Length: 124
Image (cartoon, rainbow, N blue to C red; front, side, top):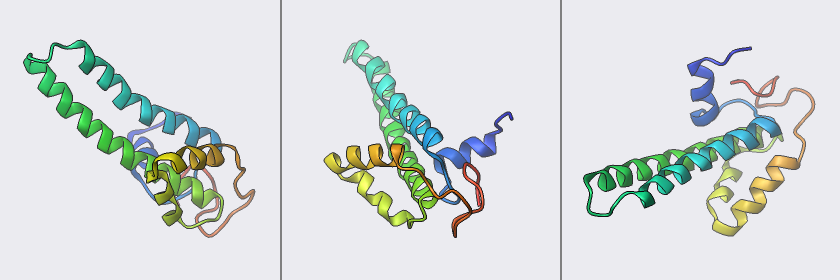
């Protein structure tokens, strides 16, 4: 089934619905790699060049989008576990976030429908 732009926007920025373990892991990994790649490119550019400022701005925008994306991914993953999305705030706590991410990657969600949706990997 091919993905369309609405599904991609929902995956990275939507807060409704449920998300299973594999898409959560892969989307979370992608959301972390984008700002890391931009930061890597930034380190290769001379500090005094104009592209240095452009890459710095792009990096900060990508980082903000990455943080938001990781929170929304966490909300949807928590919905799959039948938990409220507010628990995703724990993804903002520096050391705790790694443990929460690992937990969300390995702990199976509800097998059937729950109050957050009938199916996983789709908006409500």
